Amino acid sequence: MTMDKSLQLRAGLVRARSVLTRAERIARLQAADRWKEGDSPYGLPKVRVYKLSVKKKKKRKEEEEGAEAGKAGGTAAKS
Image (cartoon, rainbow, N blue to C red):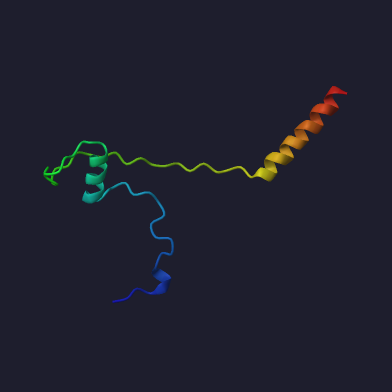
């Protein structure tokens, strides 16, 4: 059965997932040298999922205008 186009998400999963699949957990454990080949894939230790916080970037035009206004205000105060 197909899904109607209006119900489909265009960007996929936007937010961060808090649960990893078994394969993702094994890959992270291998990277941290906590899992060796031949170990049981069941009963894996917990793996921390880091949440990334995205900071908004300031626009360069606003910074330049603010710097120019600061320079103009600073020279007027000295005179």
